[in-house]
Amino acid sequence: MIGGLSWVSTAEYYKRVNEIAQAEAGGVTSARIVLESVNRQEYVDAVIHRQDEAAACAQIRRSAVALHSAGADFIVITCNDVHRFVPDIQAELEIPFLHIAQVTAEAIKAQGLKRVAILGVRKTMEGDFYTEILARNGIEAVIPNEDEKRFIHDSIYQELVENRFLDETREAYKRIITSLGDRGADSVALACTEIPLLLSPEQSPLPAFSTTELHCRAAVAKALAAA
Image (cartoon, rainbow, N blue to C red; front, side, top):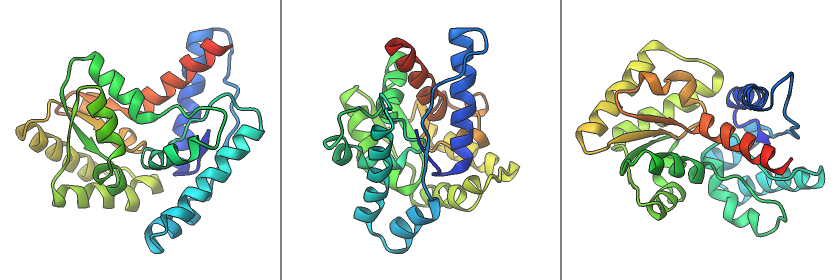
């Protein structure tokens, strides 16, 4: 598991993976996890301050190689936007990544939904890794407008990754999701692993998919299948 991006969502991953593993396997089962917790400040310095994608990718690559060396069977990244680096890094590894966008697309497809709004940081909303994977599954991505993107991105960087979850922010997300529904979205992907800690799928005005929960469940299923 590559974590630290942020520690807030990483803690939720650790908790949910172990809760699901115990429920599935019984007894006092806990998951065998190798955790590479990267320095988020290093990542933010590269991505935001220096706008150096190569340096950010190198940071994630080092963690992936360390997990491989530690004997991991597959890699889970506890952050949506970092998955944009997976194609470049995967070519250098013998073990696979469990891709969060693929897991999410499969869940949306299983519900028969066709137009999903993507909520996350700018690299997720404006990048192509989600839209391409969704398209391969017959799903169209609906992207928030500029004002909505700014609010969502800023709330993640200024509140959620610092473990701050405000009622007024939650209500603003609900208004954004309602507006996206008015513009044709039939569902919403909570495509930042901190967003479900602010707004649960049950609180969403549209059918919502917690990428964190889906990823954790897929990780446990994959691990148990290999056991």
